[in-house]
Amino acid sequence: MGKDSRFVAFAKHFEDQLGAYLSGIGALFLAVGPFFKPVSFLLTGIFMGLGVVAVIASAIRSNKRIKEADSRAAGALERFKEREKEIVQHLETSKQAKSAILSSIEQIVSSLSKQLNLYNGAIRTTVYAFERSENALVPLARVSQNPSFASINRPKYPATNGHLGKA
Image 1 (cartoon, rainbow, N blue to C red):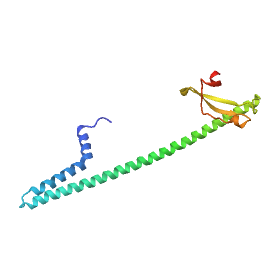
Image 2 (spheres, rainbow, N blue to C red):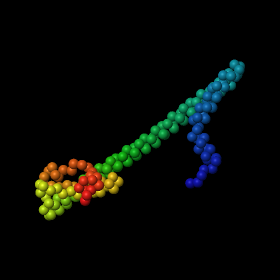
Image 3 (cartoon, one colour):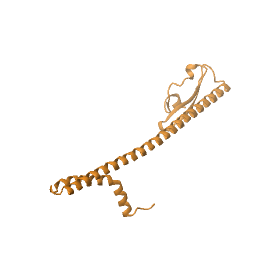
Image 4 (cartoon, rainbow, N blue to C red):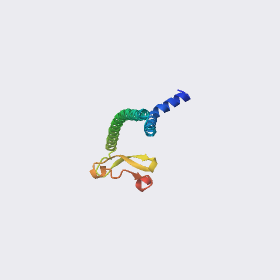
């Protein structure tokens, strides 16, 4: 696919602009027609007729191009909607996978805390992930017999503050 020759490039440009050329020629014929002497009604009629034909041809061509553009836009919109559905489906699958992973981590932490005799009402066991971009610890799972200890209150804990920062 090399560069088009000058003639091909001109032909494509002319084809793209044909409606505008026809409209301009039609307007020119319509403007020039009345300036002929009244004795040459035939010449005036020919110019006026050619002008009307050119303007009508331009309108028809423009209407056809608008319909083609609408058709292409409708196809692109349909493809966009299909892609959006795929993305939403992948997002839902991703949310389900995340939920399953977090549930598995919680089950593992619960099992480990029971095996280590840490599962009671006075102790809570938490597993954190380190988020480098914000230098924070994000709780992934927290277990305890005491329901108020088992809930995760904050979404992030600064890695440099409090007991976590000391650890």
